[in-house]
Image: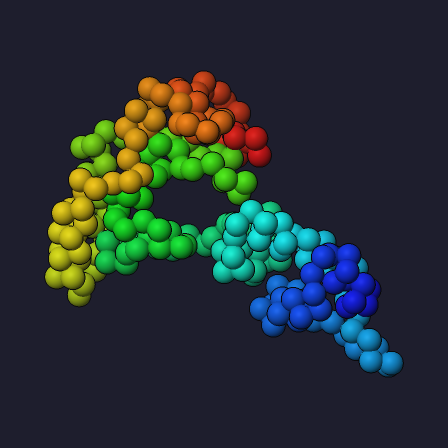
Amino acid sequence: MRSGELARRAGVSPDTLRAYERRGILPEARRTANGYRMYPPEALERVELIQAGLAFGFTLAELGRFLVTKNGADLGAFKTSTLRNVVITPPYFHDGSQDTLWDVLDHYNKGGVQNPFLDGGIQRLGLSESEIDDLVAFLASLTSDRFAALGKKELARQRALRGKRPQRDTAAALGQKAQKGLVGPFGDAVPPQTLRDPATIGGR
């Protein structure tokens, strides 16, 4: 498919196609003898997947593992980093949106936030405050000896922010109320537990 036709059918400019090539998320076009840039047949689907991710509000940097695997199922998926020294590596998440480990645990404690790429197996943790504190203490214990002083200082900083937690919703985490605007097992009040494959929970 010629670059102009691909751009027209995908609703993007030829410059956008070249930018995707430079980022490595679109196969490089080959040149024909008469100078036309030709893309393989799967290029249209690839561009449409990229555009769909962008339409959901992702930036190219947020498209996740898709940029590596070129697999549409990896849109919004990210490689999980090690927990070693996690206390000294804030801010957290792929976009740096969570400032403390308490914020991270609050996010997962209530079952996350619904989005088109949410893993179907996610469920609320339902942890108590003391369990969250214990889990943060465990995560802090994974700090290497050479970073011990920095880890202690960072844990104290995060502990000081413990009272300001925008993700905290204890009632939703404990299943006492549904999260506003959310559906499925992570948003309903106390979802029924089944023996189904966890990866199918949430509609996936």
